[in-house]
Image (tube, rainbow, N blue to C red):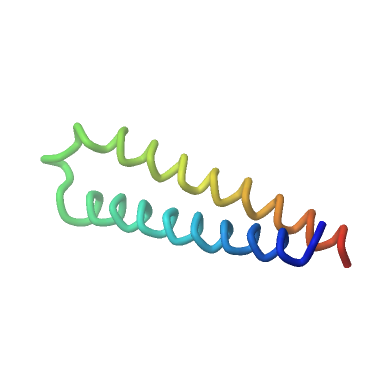
Amino acid sequence: MSDEDIKALEKEVKKTKRLANEAASVLHDLIEDRLPDAYGELMGVAQATYDACKAWDEANKKFLAASTTSA
C-alpha cells in the first residue's frame, strides 16, 4: 500500500473518531441534562453513538493493518 493510501486511511480514522466523539457528546448531554423526560430519544442516540464508534473501530483496524503491512 502506498504512503498516499495510508495517509488517506489515517485521515478516515481521524474523521470517524471526531464523529464518534460528537455522537458520544450528544449521548452524554442527553443523559446528563434531559433524562428522564427525553427517554424516548435514548435508543436512537445510543444507536447512532454505537454506529459511529463501530465505524471508527473499522477504520482504525484498516489503518493499523495497512501501517504494519507497509512497515
